[in-house]
Structures are given as structure tokens and as C-alpha cells.
Image (cartoon, rainbow, N blue to C red):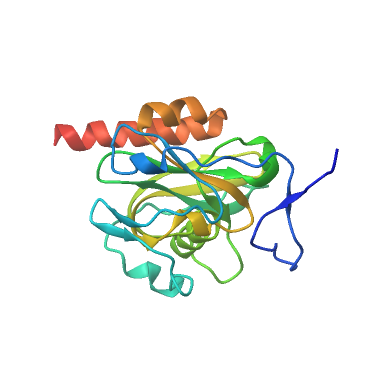
Length: 214
């Protein structure tokens, strides 16, 4: 039998091709507008149009992370515990309630699905890191809208923000992701199998309940 390897269309940070050992499959792209549908994009999935009033369209260049500080919301001081590395990410939520998750290439880190996140590079803020990581891992441009929480992970202490999508296209995910999922909250609960991600999801539900009581 001939081995026909499948590679991610985006090279890694060193310009090397990334082989996908068990490539994901696109699913339910036709049901994109259905708020109850779980949709899976893979690199170069063909799906265009509008979703909740925002176009799904590839962006010519990455987002301007330098402008991340202008978003108008308060957040508590970030206190990095000893022995941890600073990181940031975002829970990107659609107006219809669905959430965007990423599937790391080749299950990196033991994840089948997770929220986009990454370590803070020198000179970059937490907000800018969150915007950059969402773009790199999901192909989406987002704006942080609120602080969600700070979470201890294996090696990092990660600040998560709530965010809204303002552009981009999930089919243009970077090499670190082999799929991007758009899922209702209950489906997210099933997909997120790591305790740390379940804690982030629980914080999201708590925030939603608090907002509903106001």
C-alpha cells in the first residue's frame, strides 16, 4: 500500500512542513448558520459568507496586536506564581452562543480540542498575546471584551479573556491546529476533556449566569 502523507498547508515557525498523522475531517459546513450545529473546519475548507453579521473571509495580514490595549474593560492585576510562565488565551463566543475551539495538530500536548492560548513573548502584553494566539491557532481576528479568569496549567499561569470575532476565516488556521470547531456549549463540554479547560468553561458559564441576573 502506498503511503500518501498529508501535510498541513502552513509551515511551522522554522519553515518546515508539518505532517498530519491522523488528519481531521470537515463536518457540517452546510449547517454553519444553525445555532445548534457543531461545525468543523480543516485547513483550506471551502466555506464563505456571513455568520452572525460578520463575514468569514481570509485576512491579508495578521491583526494589529499593538491595539489590544484600547479595549474598554477592567481586569484585575496579573500575579504570576513562582515557577510558572505567563500565558494568555481567549474564549471566542458567537452571538448565537456557540464557541470556537481548536484541535492541536497531532494531538500536541495531549489535547483533542482546547481553547486557543499561548505563552507571552518578551515585550508583549497579555491582551496582545490572546489576540495573536487566536489568530495563529484559529485564523480568526478577535477583540477581547472581558476578563474571564486566571488559570494554573501544567507549566503556565494563563489569563483568559472573553472575545468576539470581528474577521478572519477558520480554514486559514496556522500549523499548530489541524481543525477548528464551532460548537454549542454542551458540545464544548464533551470535547474539552482536560480538567484545565473544563475550569475555563465553568468560569464562562458562571459569568453568563451572573450577567443574566443583573
